[in-house]
Length: 411
Ligand code: ATP
Ligand code: MG
Image (cartoon, rainbow, N blue to C red; front, top):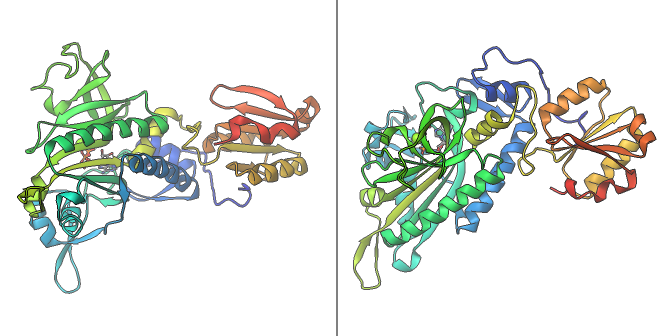
C-alpha cells in the first residue's frame, strides 16, 4: 500500500471526548471513527487490525473442530420469550416493526442457535457439534464507555458446543481454554491475561473469564501470583483461596474481561426441547457450552496494554502492515524496493508522500509496523537501507539487494 493513496487521516491530536487511552489512540490514529457513544466505524487501518484478530481467532476455533456460520442480528420476540430473557435481560434492544410485531436485536445467540441446532442434530451420531460465528452484537449498555471496551454495538466471536453428556462437555471446555490461551498469546497479551473463576449462574458451579490485567480495567480480580489463576469479584466472598493451590495470598488487581466461557449444560436445550435419541434408543437432552470473545474489546485491550497515546508497536500477527518503508528523498530506489517487497507478498506500507521526515516518523509511530525500513541519502552512503526492529530499537544497514531476503519481514 502506498501511503499517498491510503484512506488514512492521522489527526495526531487527542479528541476531546476520548474517555480512555484506546479511544484517544484509535481515533487520533485514524483506526476508528466515533458515530455516537458506544458505536464506532472501523476505518481501513483499523479494519486491517480487526481482520487479523479475526483470522487468529478463526484458526484457533477451527483447530478445535469449530465450524463457522453466520446468524442473523434480528430475532422474533418468541425466541426470547421462550427462555424468559425477553423480560429478564435489561440490555436487550426491543422494538416494533412495520406489521406491529416485536423483535429483538440479538445481544448473544443462545436463543437463536439452540432452536436452529434442532434442524442439525437428531441422533447421538450428530454429536458433538461445535458452531461459531464472528458477528456484531447489540447491547443497551446503560453506560457505554472506555472507547471500544464497552460498546452498544460490538463484535464478538461466539462458539456454541453441543454434547451427549457432561463428561464430553468437560473435555471440550478444557480444550477451549487451551485455544483461548493461544489466541491471547498470538494477540500479544498472553502474559497479562489470566484465567479467572467466576459465577456459573444457575446452571454450573463456575464459569471462567479471561481477564487481562490493566489499570484501566473496570473489573476486579483476586490473583494468585504463583498460579496466575484468579477469582472474580462476584465470588470472592465464597471462594477465598486460590482454586488451584488453595493459597489465601491473593492480590487484588484491576482487569479487562476479554473472554468468557460457560457450561450451559441443559439450560437452553431444555427451554427449546433440543434432545436426541442415544445409542440405546432413549431420548436425552443435549448438553451445551458457550464461549465468547469480544473482538472489538480485544483490539482496545491490546491498545490499553501496549500503546502510548501516540505510538504503538503491534504484535507481528496483529499488525496492519508488517513493514513500514519510509523514503527520505530517495523515492526512486524506495519505489523499487517497495515493488520487490509487494511481489514477495510482504505486508508493506510505503510512505511515498511529500512530507517532512518528522511527519513521516510520527505517523509511522501511529501505524505501528514492527519493522521499519528507512531509505535516505545517509543510509545509501552507509551501504543500503536502515532496517529497524521497532520494539527493541535495534537497527542495521542492509544492502538493498538483501532486503527481501530478511527473515524478519516474513509475516
Ligand atoms: P461484561 O461483564 O463486560 O459486561 P459479559 O459478561 O456480559 O461482559 P459475555 O456476554 O460473556 O460478556 O460476552 C462475551 C464477551 O464479549 C466478553 O467477554 C467481552 O469480551 C465481550 N463483550 C461483552 N459486552 C461487551 C460490550 N458491551 N462491548 C464490547 N465487548 C463486550
Ligand atoms: Mg462478565
